[in-house]
Picture 1: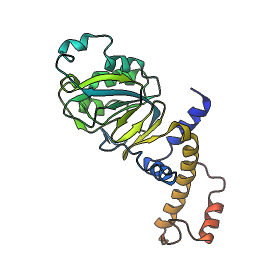
Picture 2 (picture 1 turned 90 degrees about the vertical axis):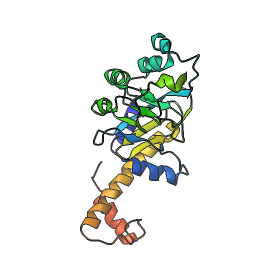
Picture 3 (picture 1 turned 60 degrees about the horizontal axis):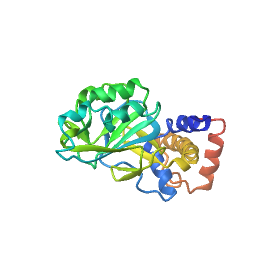
Picture 4 (picture 1 turned 135 degrees about the vertical axis):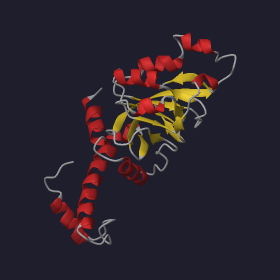
Length: 239
């Protein structure tokens, strides 16, 4: 991993998905928030990592017998063993949580291998166990049945759709208690820098609002005098 990418990821850990959403909206990207997905346990550190994708299609009975679990070439297993350290495994389950996308054993394996997180627009089985693991995990809702009853793993590290968002391998995923944003890889550096500045401004705004100041002219910033105050306030401050 390049130093530049490491620096970008470090910056994104300091900003919220809400700030990223606003930043991307300003750039014309309105649909980068993965829909219908929530953290299994609030309060974990912000998840940041490059997308490594797994795509499911509907299962077919002759292709998904229980013996598939024994196949070392099963793409779900292969993906768990090959998802790079620091990446986020993103699963396209077609927004269908009637059967699990994965369970606690596979998610534990990802955690032990140093994967930064896992996201599915389907569901997890063993969700209470996964919630307590030291890896950020996001899904639609708990789901007990095995993935074989509904899902057939068909492709690894190809473009997918997850929660109505196009996810390309290498895109940067950022997840917090509000949900998960997908940042296109080609603009991740500039988004990170802009979001740090936006976060600094939001701190300034919050200080003023707590002290009783009106938001008119302050948020959004339309008053030149307040803009000058902010420029002076932010001198020497870093996120």
